Amino acid sequence: MPKSEFGSTGPEGIVAKPGSSKEYKTGSWRVKKPVFKHDKCNDCRICVMVCPDGVIFGEDKKYWADMDFCKGCGICAEECPVKDIEMVLEVR
Image (cartoon, rainbow, N blue to C red):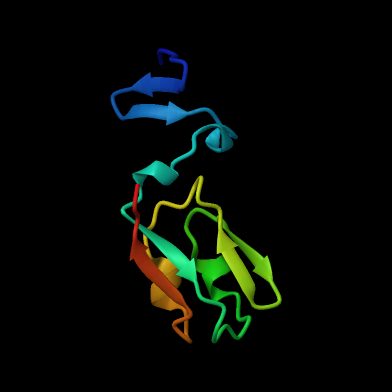
């Protein structure tokens, strides 16, 4: 399989080098971003568990997303049982 600067290339496309995700900030892909309101949070950590990119961090009812890598999928807001996360339009 031919190599590129990103990893291996083949008929399936580019396969990234293992452990390289921190090198590629993907936050610019997003259209909406999560806003953690910190009003009703019950510290269940569901947002942390369901984030497909693993970019939600925090404790003691204060959570945030690493916006360098958050793609704005909205799963955290959808799954929050107390609706303490709001997806808002990203303004650039």
